[in-house]
Image (cartoon, rainbow, N blue to C red; front, side, top):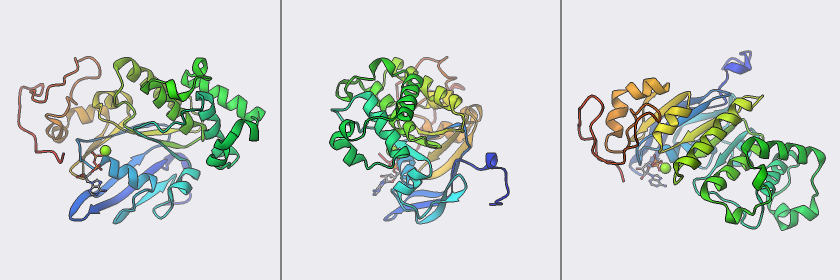
Length: 297
Ligand code: ADP
Ligand code: MG
């Protein structure tokens, strides 16, 4: 890449020609993805499509057989998850990994310290309040983040008693407190009811539009309607291949995407205007009802 190029044109996160094999199975075949700064990007695909595998490659947990990964234009293909985190890549997990005895605020403080004080998480956890009383900067930034996420009122609540939707929000908050440039969200909406889904998606929009330094989100999600409503660009994987990429309207109109998803979800529904369908055998809007390929799982 040309070093003199304007920084705004460099993707916050990108990968090219990524191939991953598990024995004889090609989990990803020559996949490329790009997350521009300041955007929400969706990654969707039926079960077994390769979404988690791609997340593993991006976060550094999985080494691809071939291909490269870049954070803000910097080649991190050989870098550890920790050094990718230092370069601005954060992630959340599908099952929130919270410390049950700590409050909502404590989790954000920990995230903040990871970034600003290079504290070791585990030594902090021994008794981090006593060891490291908060600085003025820490208090100010953590309170601002609690406010942005709508968590101020439950800041002193222990994580142990939070419902799933709020636990996910705390995970997002902890990731955000490290001041990342990109957050990878692994199925952040799974298991949430409509109200919790709306709350979380509203927060996603708010944190991206409020970010002065171009925070991006890359979201793997089964709730395709939410992804189409939130994302400015969507990548679609099927059987390890990137079968489509584009804007929500391009994805809705894509015949390969419809075929891949038939029997899984109704990706063609226009946002929330259409009722939710949970049946596995329903016709597409144009009345055709072909049978999709068998899934991996
Ligand atoms: P998705 O997250 O889209 O459901 P995955 O990335 O988990 O898909 O899986 C892609 C394919 O790779 C699937 O066929 C899955 O069974 C296979 N796979 C994933 N992880 C492993 C592994 N560690 N060993 C062997 N096969 C795996
Ligand atoms: Mg998966």
